[in-house]
Amino acid sequence: MALSPLYKETLLDALRDELRVAGFKKRGVVFHRVSADVVHLIALQSSIDSPGQIPQLTINLALWCKPLAARGTEPSVIAAVWRCRLGDVLPTKTDLWWTVPDKASLPKVARGMLADLKAHGIPALDLLPDSAALFALWRGGQSPGLAASEAQRYLAALANQPS
Image 1: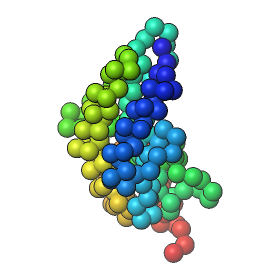
Image 2: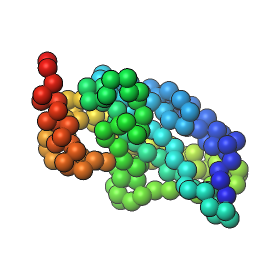
Image 3: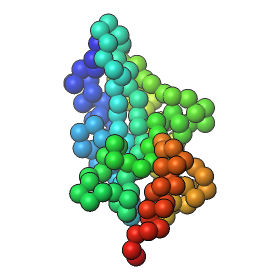
Image 4: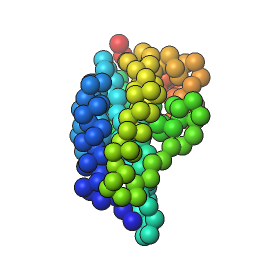
């Protein structure tokens, strides 16, 4: 069964109040925060709808980088050059999904999401306050959410940009 739009909005409202403190604003199912020349994104993702299954949710983290964005491109998870699931930044590095069997479970789900976001998700984004930090990460051989070759292609394109 699909997650009811009312349930999703209730959950997003619970997240919004807490994420606002960390500087995030809500637009649709995505929270965004501008930091220098990047935009940090936190997005709620629903599981694929299957009849009779209990809905599940996960959280995607992403970073949109203005110096690498195509002209006219708006910040989005799809257009981001750094992205991962919240579970990827947990100490266990496990894909994390929350089940939402009914409306009564929403407060518990929201608390769990917020606890992991505050402890691990937001600090992971805080490590990338600008494009220079992202480029240093790539130069160090790390490229979360990208193939290493993609990160190298971005770095090469950056080196060829006029100053």
